[in-house]
Length: 114
Image (cartoon, rainbow, N blue to C red; front, side, top):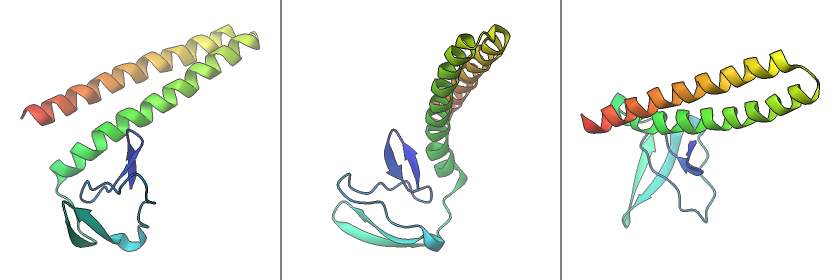
């Protein structure tokens, strides 16, 4: 399972458990998913690469945004310590992370657009 927009999502099939339940354990990727009134069982099913990209790209973007938020907090801490050059380098990393995320968003758009 990976978190996408705060929702646990199965990397193998893209299924998400209901919000009021705990996500299934992933020992050897053997669990049940409920879809529109029916259940199917997954046993080590490997998703195709297109499905993986549809799941991973938003996950990577969200993950990078979380890191960038942490970096920004450390910019302030570095400045409070009188380490301006360090703060500037961390700010540079934040800017590069934003550029990275834009490239990932563009990749997601290209994926969805064909």
